[in-house]
Length: 89
Image 1: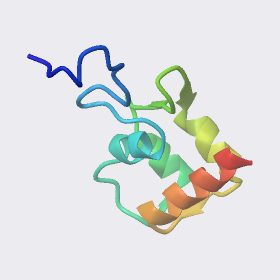
Image 2: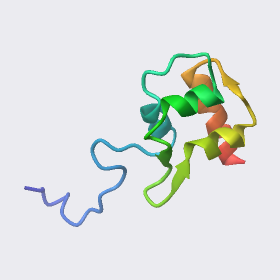
Image 3: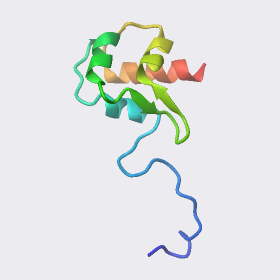
Image 4: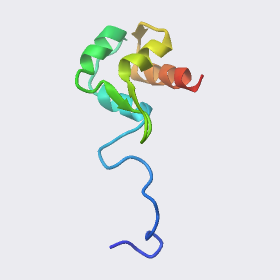
């Protein structure tokens, strides 16, 4: 039962088990070995190609990777950083 302070408060953020933005990317690519090419990343992500960027916006992983202008990534942190930079522009 919600407390008085919780009543009427709009739920923010993803539902349990969901992630948005770069967190959704890392979730979709869990277990991938780096370094990895763009094609290897897309192959690993089969079935998880649609990334929930925000609650209202879904982006295809291939589109995100294409926006980076890169074909190879050495690590997950590098991939996340490059995607973050390319989506801010």
